[in-house]
Image (cartoon, rainbow, N blue to C red; front, side, top):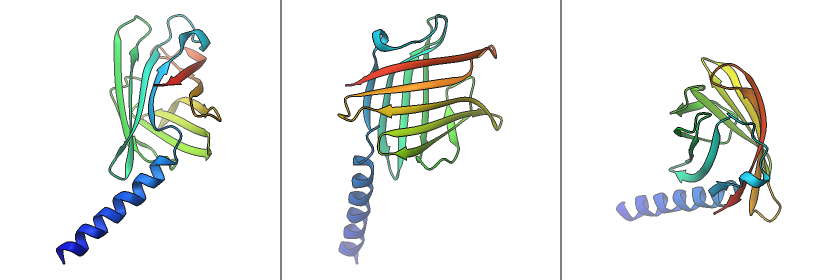
Length: 153
């Protein structure tokens, strides 16, 4: 019985690993400021990391706010379009990701059930870079729109 349980657990792990391996977002992404169009005073996510967390995906974001102070937030969930808690972001408490196709993902951040930021992440065909186009409101409620380019680490 113990061997059967171990085999079942191993099989589930392999299925989950295969599913995440096909997600081009997985890995660590570093901001390429030269290719980005981020307005002065807007926050910058300088490093974004996607990794497996059981049967979910964990996204860890590090960067600086509009004043240059460090920021850090974490999200764990699935890319199924459903809201999952977002920790460490003063402007949002929930985030959802939804795969549009193999290289495009939509995201929505919410605060108290209302969207605060929407975006589209596009991974290059070679998988070495990604671009995110975002629109929403900053911490002061001011409308912002920007494009950030990232290189795979």
